[in-house]
Amino acid sequence: MSEDIRALDAITLADLRSWVGCTEASKDDITPAPLRALSAVLDRGDSDPALGAVVPPLWHWLYFLQHPRQSELGVDGHAKRGGFLPPVPLPRRMWAGGRLRWQAENPLLVGDAVSRISRIASVEHKAGRSGDLLFVLVEHEMHNQRGLALTEEHDIVYRAAARRDDAVPKPIAAEATAAWQREVVPDPMLLFRYSALTFNGHRIHYDRSYATEVEGYPGLIVHGPLIATLLVDLVRQQRPEARIQSFEFRAVRPTFDLYAFRLNGQLSADGKTVRLWAQDNEGWLTMQGSATLA
Image (cartoon, rainbow, N blue to C red):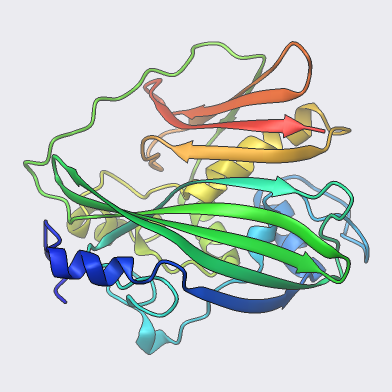
């Protein structure tokens, strides 16, 4: 199927929807080296993760990484369409959001042997002003030797290739004030190191000429999972004694490496929920989320 399309026909949509219910099983070991590396990337300066240490929330994204062979990569740096995920012919693919819940009595620990069951839960089509959108929902369950440790819903969105006459979505103004705030400078070194650490070959994060000339963006795109991780890290910095029970987030607008962006957090009156959001240099909302504290 050609990837240079604006609309999906009925036959293609029916084929893509046939992936619903497909499952995949995988295994990985929680080793300390990736945790040590992410601590350095986030400039945290944590102590060396010891055997039995709890994996910080969202840091499980360092594991169960896909390792396609070089010949299996598409032009965009992602693995070519097919395999576990449906072979969506729309060329632009992004992580749109997710919902996670940790089992309080059974956290992931350094040294755990972990199994993951993944399932395609839904494939939904929407017609947008700039072409078709396809939303794929993937459900994950992670189990260690003690039982279920984490459940996750992962939203993926596929879009048509950019065109100069595409309608630009109206931006949403972010709240101007928050109790917790942090400024982040997303320089190319940060984006490259996070891409390398997560084995993410998507060229929009490190190849400026590809991002601007092929996909039509003004600069390199900051990884959605990186922003989500930084939002959760804001909670950890402000409430180091708290345990995050659940977290949900949604990407609203791309963040580019051209300017610093700001993380914001607001703790609820009862101290149980934290509203989280990120904004770009112009004050537009780029990601919003919520964390529930145990």
